[in-house]
Each structure stands twice: as structure tokens, then as C-alpha cells.
Amino acid sequence: MKAGGQAPSRDERFPKALRLLKRREFLEVQEKGQKVPVECLLGLVRPNGRPHCRVGLTISSKVGNAVERARLRRLLRECFRKRHGQWPPGVDVVLVVRQSAKDAPFPVVSRAFDGITRKLQRLFPSVPRESPPR
Image (cartoon, rainbow, N blue to C red; front, side, top):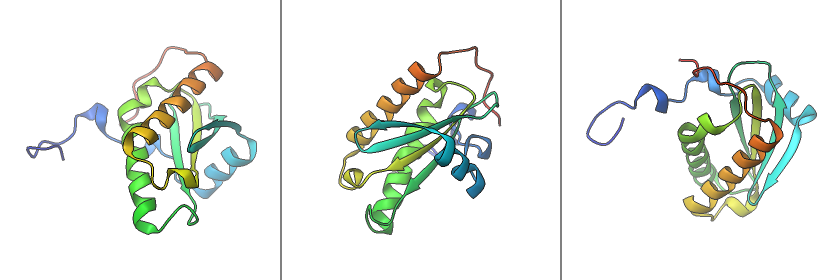
């Protein structure tokens, strides 16, 4: 819910179709994907043959306690939710959070996410996008 009790608009939701959900999907990207390192994040990218991009998050227990890891997951989901339209369609991305992200404020994590976005745009030149699934 947005401030004021309003539900988020359709474009700001984070539907399951935009997430990597199964262990097998994560492992395929991690084993066969291309590495895209930026500051406190490591992106592993692999084409998925779909009309939209999907994301998965991996945060090791070495990064911090459960509270810190949950905070980082929330930050990265928010970044993706707001900016997934800038990502090229047809890729799966696993974002691996490095230990340096543990104490990083939102602007640092956001800047690293933007760096991943720029590298993805260079690796996978734009093609016309379809609207994201609902």
C-alpha cells in the first residue's frame, strides 16, 4: 500500500512472473550465466527466451544477520520494481549481494543497481518491449 492507503499502480507491482522462484532457475543462471560485477553487487545474467526480464536475489548468511539480509532484499526489490522497465527483455538475472553491501545506505545500493542496469543494456541491446505480465 502507498502512503494514504492507496494500492500501488499496476506498473509498480512485483508479480511472480518477474521473479526467479525455483532453485533450478537460480542454478541455471548461476552455472551458465555471464558475470556482471558492480560495487557491492554481482549480477549473473542469462537469456531466458521470454518477452520480459526476471530477477532473483541471493544473499549469503555471511553478509549479516537475518534483519540485515531482509533489509537488503527489500532495497533490491524496490530498485527492481521501480526500474525493471530499463532492463532488456528476455534475460534472467541473479543478483548476488556482497558483504560490502551490509552497511551500505540506500543510495549506494541504488547506484550499484543502476550500474548493473547500464551493463545489461550494453550486453543486450534494446529490442521492442512487450508490457510486463500481470
